[in-house]
Length: 163
Image (cartoon, rainbow, N blue to C red; front, side, top):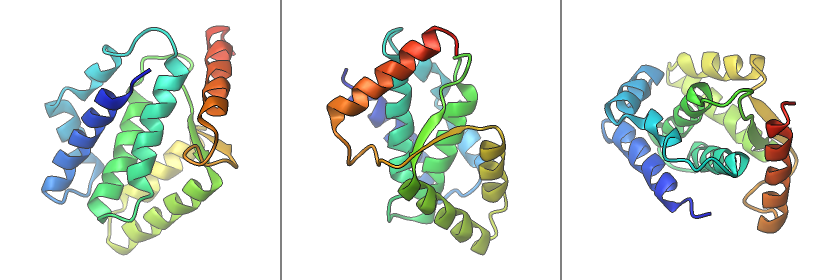
């Protein structure tokens, strides 16, 4: 499945967010609503949902853990947060995050605190309390694509059975 159009949409959303060097979740929500970004789920095919969601999450995490501006990293985090919170799937698809990415997330929280952006620690704490993350040792970017797809298909089957 080609995810390029979805990745492009996420890239444009984060670019719009960073254009004004935005830093708050409220700013991301404003951009999200102005772009009617929740319609991204309407464009998703009804099959391979786990693969699609993990691909969207992974793309956001890529922004979140990269060595770019703080605004872009925050855009990745807020986009991830909004994707998780607005998804129409019950139970919601959890966000797979590797230990390395988790370490980079903690660095982002520290950087945000240092810049007086108090919503970041609060948002991450809420995500942890709501059990948003599925922790893993393998960085998706480094693992075998075939193996990752198989694992995601197994997750999708488990969700369709209503775990």
